Length: 419
Ligand SMILES: Nc1nc2c(c(=O)[nH]1)N[C@H]1C(S)=C(S)[C@@H](COP(=O)(O)O)O[C@H]1N2
Ligand SMILES: [Mo]
Image (cartoon, rainbow, N blue to C red; front, side, top):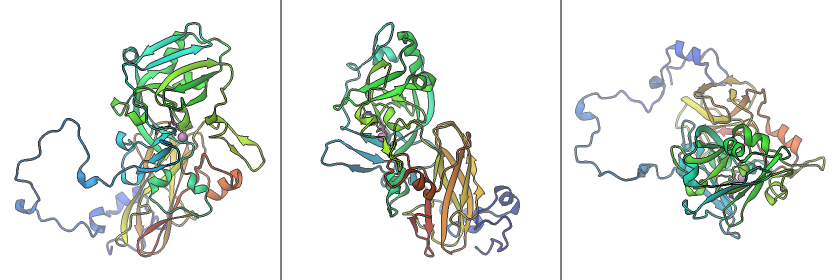
C-alpha cells in the first residue's frame, strides 16, 4: 500500500487511467500483500511426484471449483416452470460454459430423440418443407457469438428494496455462447416465402408447445437454426437438438426444441406475447413486442458476496452488452456516479455479445459505491435506476437495464444498493 503515492494523479475516487498506470511504474505485485517475494529454489515450488489420474471421456471442472454453479429458482406449483441463473460473478472472459448457461423452462426439459425430431416450414410459402436433423446437418452453417437474455432478467431490481444476493443471481438470466447452425434465411428462401407473409409463428416440441411470433425481416436478417453450442451439440436444457437464435432480441423468441415455423400475415398473439412479456405503463398503454434487449452492464468483480481483504489496488471488471449492436464505451464510477472514468474494453468487441471491461482501482479503505455505465454504437446509454423507474413506473417487470450499484463498506464487504 505504501507504494501507491497519495497524490496519484488522474484520480477519480481511486480509478486509475490506464496509460498513466503503465507509465507510473506502479506494479500489481508491489501493491498486493498476497504476493510475497517468491522463493525460487526448485524444492520450494509445489509439484506432484506421484502418478496422475487416468483419462476421462468427458472432462469436468476441478472439484475445487464446485461452488461455481447455476442457482435454481423454480415455481414448485408448476412442474418444470422456472429459471436457473448463470453465476456471472465467478466467470471470466465472455463465453458462458455450456453447463452454466442460464435456463428458462416453461414446462421442463423434454427428452427428444434427435433421429425422430422434425422441423416443418409451412403456411404462406410456395413449397412446404420438412427437415430431419440429419438433413439439417448437411446444410451450410455459420457461427455467431451472441448473448441470450430473458426479458425478465434483473426483474428483482424493480423491487422497492435492493435484493441481497450474488451478481449472477440478480442479473444472470443472460449468457453468451458461440452458436453454430443453419441461417434461417436459407431455409425460408428454399420454401419460397409468399410476399404477403410478414410474421413467423414458431412452435416447440415441449409439453406446452411453446409458441411465439417473430417478424420476417429479423428472421431473414441474422437468425440461426442452431445445432451446436460452444463447439458441441446443444445441451438438452438449451434446446437439443434444434433451437432458434435471434441475436440481441428477447430470450423468449429463441425457441428451444423448435419443430414448426408457420409463415403468416399476423402475429399469433400467443400467451408469451400477450399475457406475458408485455407490460402496462404508467400512461395505461401496454408495451408489447419489445423485442430488442437494451444496452446494459454490471460489475462482476468486486461484487456482493466477495470482500476486499485490505486497502490497495484491485481490478474492477464486468460485462456489458446491447441488443442494438456493439458496445462502444463503458465508464466506471467509484463514488456513486459523481465522477466517471472509461474502462478498457477487452477484445473481442462483437455485436450483440457480452463485452468484458476492466479498470484498475485503488481502494482507500473508505466506503465507496461502484457503478458501471455502458454506451453502445447507436449512442444509447444505460439509464440510472431513477430514470428507468420514472419512465416505466412501478408496474415495470421486464427489460430492466439500469445502472447497477455495489456499496463497499469500511470492512471491505460488498452489498447491493440503489444509488
Ligand atoms: N420451447 C421452449 N422454448 C423456449 C422456452 C421454453 O420454455 N420452451 N423459454 C424461452 C425463454 S422465456 C427464454 S428466456 C429462453 C431461455 O433459453 P435458455 O434456457 O437456453 O437459456 O428460451 C426461450 N425458449
Ligand atoms: Mo425469458
